[in-house]
Image (cartoon, rainbow, N blue to C red):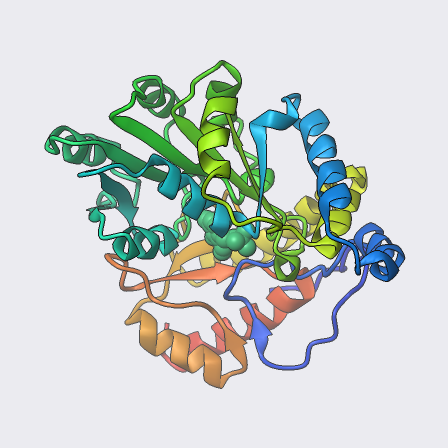
Length: 354
Ligand code: PLP
């Protein structure tokens, strides 16, 4: 595990507590462009956020080549997931989701008294689309399907052709919530975003995206949904009024329009990935292909014991996920942070812990 140069960081945060490699944040810190926009906007924060939100939505519309009535703001993409589910839910509807995945939608469904079917990933840790289709077929009522692409925590992509074909079968009885929180990190050319289907006119899909991940604005709560206007109207009816805030809107617009930010973040992420992959390979610890800012890798033992030991060593490396004991999800911080992680992992091997 060799040390590596750190890419230019905009507002490099000082580390105060343990090394946080557990929430898939962008450890480069706020983009400088966002910081500047925030400072300029704060004196105007006594006003409601309508103008700032409208400007962000216009910027997003031109970024994606869609109409503003195909976009909706969310207080993080978590709120987009909630409003999509609320928009799609109907009497007797069930939610079908992979397991493990980003699980918050299960809580939203259970709170509404909705039946939830969790379909375990395959032996290779892939989302089991065939199993999810079988769960849909077995249910007499409506199904709302949640898919996360790339999936959290595995980082694996959904098979593009199979996904597109299934999305194409959307109907009043089968609707899809596609969570693409990490899409900007994906380097695999085979990645198929559900946006293509939305743009082609499919009204049974809601795509959730966020500024919390590559854009490094997790604490400002900016997410957005993209869907056909008819779906958007249904979602808007479920949103709370004025769910946006001026700080988030101006920071997100500045980050989106800062063409160097995504490139810088990908470069940093790739450096971190290489450092960790080399160390894992040297230690013979299997890792799944990485399509995000986290890696799912083996730890040769019980995951919760490993996580506790890492915490004692000053590094937070996440939590346990169903069906994957023996694996850990590691968020990729900056390269200098990953050097610290790698050294600790090597020490763990010397102690016989991994
Ligand atoms: N979706 C996925 C797959 C995530 O991993 C996360 C956060 O970790 C979210 C959504 C929620 O992000 P936010 O509400 O900050 O946009």
